[in-house]
Image 1: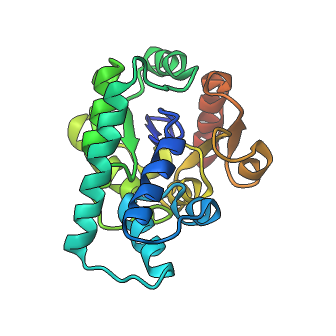
Image 2: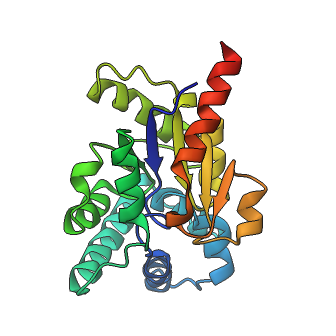
Length: 238
């Protein structure tokens, strides 16, 4: 086992936009003549795709919709999300992200994004933040039919990393995931990866029980120490 790549979640790890997502979801529920609930949003939506989030919120209120109707709701939300971000003078990118990306680049490790967010949203943020060039592999909510905590997104990311970097030959166990929710941590672990939990959305102590490493802020991640763990594990395996 060798650390060969780092995979980032998007919402809650790269961009601090959870309040905006909650606002937009609640607006959709109100437009559907349904009552929003902050507790429901937190329990059902954090770490999961819009499709799963909206479907379960609607079902919990006795509303069953077909995929076409759900897609229209998701499209409406995505358009509102992009409009609001474009109106901001500066995007709420998490402090320490660029420092961590620099450390990873110095270590010559490929990077990717694995998220339930739509590709248009991810690329808008990364492009405007001048970070898109660092993430040649993106697995978005458009690419898979399930959501975290299912491991499918992370497994697909490993496939795409190996396609993009022909000599990488990475396995899931060679990849490190950075997540902010229990659903995301479970997804990465089920894919066979070690995980850093960053306490942007949930308390440190909650993530600490689930992740391999936990930090309050991205800049606190000591990449050298993480790499040493992979090296020691590889030595034991051989």
